Length: 194
Image (cartoon, rainbow, N blue to C red; front, side, top):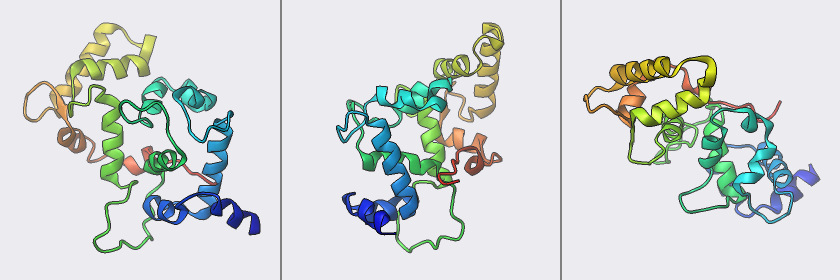
């Protein structure tokens, strides 16, 4: 227990970070160890190429988009606190955790998970998923398994079904509605301690 406390004491504002993300001290320590392992040069921040060491991301067809989600526009580095806050989107919802009155919505709420997923598609950050943006993701995920004609058909059908205002794009609200029956917590959760 002593080494746990000494590790936590080295992390600035760790209590606030745990409060904001819902991660336990054990989770924070594990994430801190992972962050340090990725930060091979000991700079105190990560660059996009540092994420290449995560084989699951390297093998993921949209891994570059997931990595990009860690970085704010115009920023080329991410510090430990930001790293943890992004990963908190993938923390399973703690149904037993009491909701504090007047507290902000948890980072790992259904709505925030959907916003995170939406930004992986909305690459130009205009608040809508265009047919071209959808096609880019479909091409990355399905690659050579289907023809371009089939991909275009899938994209057109997806937009037709989700596009409620008929502007040929998918807004966040339309994206959210189209995924109402999907268990997004299950699909976007990582067990951080096994």
